[in-house]
Amino acid sequence: MSVIDIFTVTGTWTKRNDLVDVEVIALGAGGGGGSGGTGALSTVIRTGGGGGGGGAWNTLFWPASILATMTVTVGVGGAGGADQSGSSSNGNDGSDGTDTTFGTWLRAKAGVKGLAGQNSGVAGTGGAAGAGIVDGAGGAGAASASAGTGGNTGSLSARGGSGGG
Image 1 (cartoon, rainbow, N blue to C red):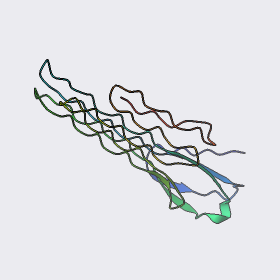
Image 2 (image 1 turned 45 degrees about the vertical axis):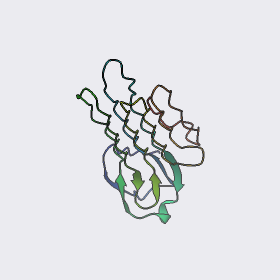
Image 3 (image 1 turned 135 degrees about the vertical axis):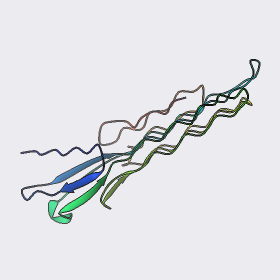
């Protein structure tokens, strides 16, 4: 019999006595994208870079090797950069996502924030991808006016999120 525990918020996982194995799949949260700059009508401005996608991690544990209870920390996505209402202002950086963990045994890294677009025509840089299992990292965010890259396919047969642009 399979038992699936899904955590969408931070909580405590409790080991059952009849487990044969414990498979943990964790997804790091993505970074927030940067906001765009503002400028006069004839000024070249750029949008902010997309936030990096969170990494994925998948591990199988033997029940005897882990504690009776484990703290599960669910990562939170980074906020997007605040908008600008001024007539000639640079945008604002987004914020980094946070990691997802299963006790101290497993950590899926979060994506990094996208940087602000500039009113001088400089594109916001995309955020870096979160690390995960081999070939299971999230996608890096893209600079403005570019498409984000998808993450590599890992043993989860899934890809990390693409950054915006």
